[in-house]
Image 1 (cartoon, helix red, strand yellow):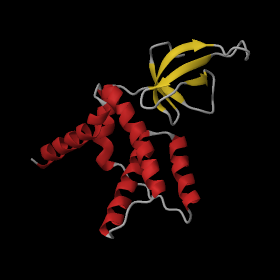
Image 2 (tube, rainbow, N blue to C red):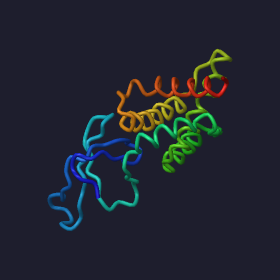
Image 3 (spheres, rainbow, N blue to C red):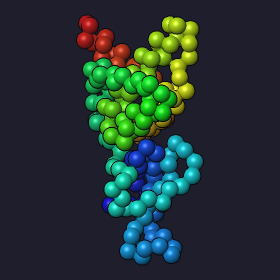
Length: 172
């Protein structure tokens, strides 16, 4: 059970602060709800504390975040290609439902590759790819920002510099 003031990861919303644990007026008096405030979006969410549909978990630790970043070079890019825009969106949605960091990183790597291929042909990345890339970055970078104690906008540079340092020390 999460307590008011704690941070948690709520489904595909990302990191949220638990504002309070409450019951809904006029609702089931036995069922507890979390009043959540997402850190990287506007609004509030009333989430059932016993929901099995939307995963809720604690934010990863600093050590877990650094280990995840160190593992990134070895993670495989997962190709997402659909015959239709809807089929492509469904593939991305399935990866988000899985919710693992490795799935998000694999998706992001694949979209980076697609972006490079599109740019080589003087084209732009598709709208669906762009949308899911932004969502994956928001989820991953948002959690890493909290775990590492960094501002959100510094996470990408932190990842790059950490991987560059690891590459330099491996090559030395």
